[in-house]
Structure formats: structure tokens, C-alpha cells
Length: 373
Image (cartoon, rainbow, N blue to C red; front, side, top):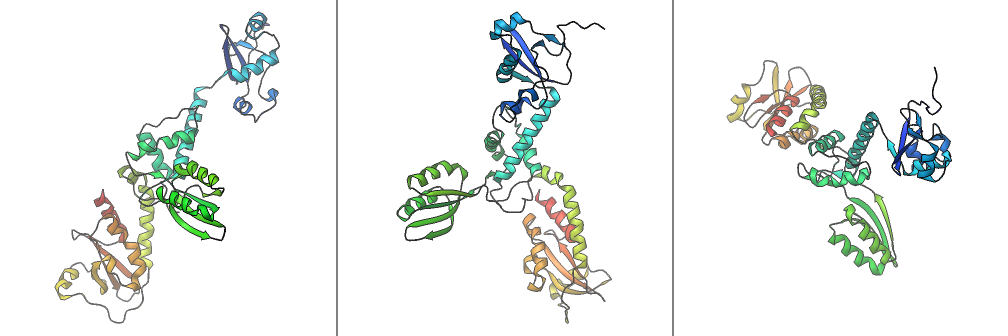
């Protein structure tokens, strides 16, 4: 089949387009190499260009005419013209590639907020899924020509309008002459910094403290004026654990994790063994009838009578700490510890503030969380 000399077909290419002098010129490049070339990572043009030919239309294979190239670039040297188009031209990206780049940038923004922001109440970072959901709720969108990190941090005011979040503090270590120690401490106090370590010697003062990242430039300027040294010890000071509750949507999103945790807690409650008790504690007379109504036929002894979770004795300190979450969700929960007849297993039953019985900690926790919504 005859193919005209002025037509060269290419497939699976990335097109860089340049408009000048009323004409459009295109070159065919390998995918994912144009950006590397522009950033300076790729030096060899041959690894970028699929062909040194200059086209009027790559998809149709129409080659640009010499007179048009001479008018637009003052030369017909294709290699030089390709370099100009690579530098000044616009990269044409397919819809799928553009969508993939947008999703990658959005994930980078989520990662930035997770690493650099915390819950003010707990000083713990939020899970990525929670941040992603919140960004979509505020209709966050990215400009591909700007820094992802900068745009992510600019979204903080919108996020703060729907839930508590702030930049995590940075940990600094500053060393200044002893005569400038007071100036440094004054700056830290004025910017609500927290001093962790302060060492004074005959000639220098070394101070380690945490402070808001927005003060970094001013702090750096101050230490230079004092002829001292500044070091960033920790970029984001956070607690190790991840924050727990967020809102109703978050509760639904983490339902599967909670179910697994509740099963584990229920199994743990059944295998825990308490210290043997020679003489079981009996319930006070005015409450004994109320308790006996909830005891099953297999229950023999009440080790600890019904009362607040915080009132559990020290020998059951591990249970007291674990069950304390109930009061965080809904205050007023009570617990009763029972010993089975002929067994060392200890069962814990719970009573809601309304007097409803929950036979396991997992069941009590679910009710308390539901009541807190």
C-alpha cells in the first residue's frame, strides 16, 4: 500500500505541542520522559524523542513543511527545533494519564496532612481515610502547576471548620551565647513554645523546645542575629497512636475494625483469670435483691459488687483501665465481677446509666458508643 512521503504514522506516543507564528508544531516523545527531561534528570534527548521529525499533526502523521519551520524558528534543523519545542511546548496528556496524576497528587496531599497535622485534643495524627474523606467533603482540588504540600496546608482552614485539626508542633534545638539566652526564651514564651531541655554553661545556652512551624523563619533569623545555631530535631511532634473517634461517617468507615476488636476483647474477657478469693464479697443488703435478679443459675459468687468502673480494686487494675473507655463514651456505667462455680474464670457484666444489662464488655462498649452519637 502506498504511503505518502509527507506522512509518518506513530503510535503510543506522548505529544509536545508548540504554537508560534500562526502555526502548530508537534513532536513525538516517549511517555514519562518529557517531565524527566525538563527537570534535568534526563540529559539525552534521544531517550526522550521517538523521532527527530517535526510534525504539523502527530496523530495523522503529517510532517511540517520546511518553509513553515524556517518562518517560525529561522532554521530547518529538526534536532534544534525539537529542543526548542521540548523547552517551550505544552505536553499533551491523555485523560487516563491526567486522572492518574490527579489521584496521585491527591494521595500526596492526604499523606502531607497525616504527617504534619494532629488532633489538638490528643496530639495524635488522624488516619489517612479520615483526612481523605474530609478533603472530599470540603471539595478540595489541586492545581497541577503548584506545590502539593503548599496546597494541602492551605486547606487547613476549611478542614478546621468541620473538625478539630492543627499543624503539629516542631521540635527545635537552639544554641546561643549565654548573653542572648533571655532573648531566646522570651521569643519561645511569646510564641507559646514549650521548653523541654535547658542547659546552661559558662559561654552558651542550649535549649530544646517545641513550637508552631510557622515561627521557623523568625526563629532562624533570631538565632543568626544572636550568632547561634538552630537545628530542627523533629518535623512533627505527635503521639504514636492514631486518634479514635471522629464522627458518624468515621464510625461507619471503621465498623469492620471495631467488630474485630470487640471479638478479641470478648475472647480476652473469658480467658482472664483473677487471684483466688477465699471469702467472696457479698453485696450490700439494699442492693442484693437487685443483683440476684440478674444472676444466672451457673453463677456462684460475686467477687466485686456492682459499682462504678473506677471503683474496681487494685487487684483488678488491668480491667479497670480497659473498661474506663465506657465512661469516655457515656458516663455512669457500672460493672460487676463474678466467679463461676468450680472455675477460676471471672466474668464481668455491665449496667448502663439507664440500668440495662450488658453481659460482655464488647456489648457494653457498643451501647456506650451508640449513646454518644
